[in-house]
Length: 280
Length: 280
Image (cartoon, rainbow over the protein chains, first blue to last red):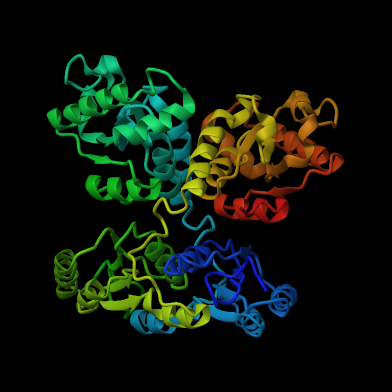
């Protein structure tokens, strides 16, 4: 008997994971997935079911979970729903229920001396309208100022990411704009910029807003090969040259920088926020 | 005696909230902030301290928390750190400690029949390189295909968001690309598109990938006024006309759509993922 879904010898088939929410499901996914990274051997199928706000919807969800449970391993169910009736229904599924809301809310009520509002998940709604609008404006700003396309209103930038091509400037800028409402521009460093060790002219007045990215030559060359195979642009020699000069330029101008070669946009962003003290 | 920081009569000053992590801090912020939305009366100062990986760093963090504690209300401390020595140090601060990791990991070990790996937070690292690269490629694709700028490779799109100007197409597209790796284009509907009720020509072959956004005329007019005050573009009459016609077009072509007027990009995105069954 072979079961291709089995993980390792003798272990049970991997359970299906459900993320249940009365709102977007983002919190349930985030904490659930974080916990599951502690069990890397298990390749789990994951399903997010957002906007469960009524007992009828909850019953339909439970029906679906029970069907999965009947056909194999007991599912894992991560829930952040707030409404007590909805939660009571969801908790009765055949899955193993992790109530991410309930685990801490009593302790928080005690700490803050207030009862929880019981309102369904507002964490990823519009919430604070001013803060929300600043995030949306930051996305527009990031698109307008991507890759040095516009130098207009550069003085409004809170951050200018600089780096040779393909070190991660664009996705990091988008992440900082979308998640943190940071007004971020990004600006490419090209070979001509290394004729002197001073910053490119448009950035000279804004050195204190600049943060540099660098990478590993081999890694950068691989990434560039995907875009322009066999080009000088993608050659190891050219990548080494650009990265070495970019790092020299950062140091000469006291620009903080980080090697992004093995980092995710989330890790680069957290590093930039911390080093530039930009957290809103 | 007055304390401008006090919330409501007789309540204590709002505590400072710390989000502590051995990685980016995203999970601690996400769950911590979600829990705190249940206490909307409290305007709390929040500080994220990422990348706490050594006992020495943990001691420095505890020192900072204790200083805040000594000067006022007991801080709230949300932690997702995994390393037991680091956690032991952090748990000893004068703050009230919420261990978001510890609360569920034992139950998960039991469910999966495996011990937790104990590796520091990998949830927002590069992780699965293929999945990560697809997210980065999706960001590029979204920028290239923003606002109908490029029709190249539209057949590769998994989703085409369509709507009149300023209904939220661009930030939603960026969110879906960055967070979910969805290849998403977006395409503006303008007055000329409403001469007939058929989709704009470049989209005719891709109707099954289209999702529509609409809004409330008053809300849309307000948003457009900020961009072009006093213009016909921003007039209530023009906004009503475009939204009514867009909705008619969606219905005539069986395009699913949602009214985004009071929704966040996260809520719009969760709705699109669910309705289009796009979750990766």
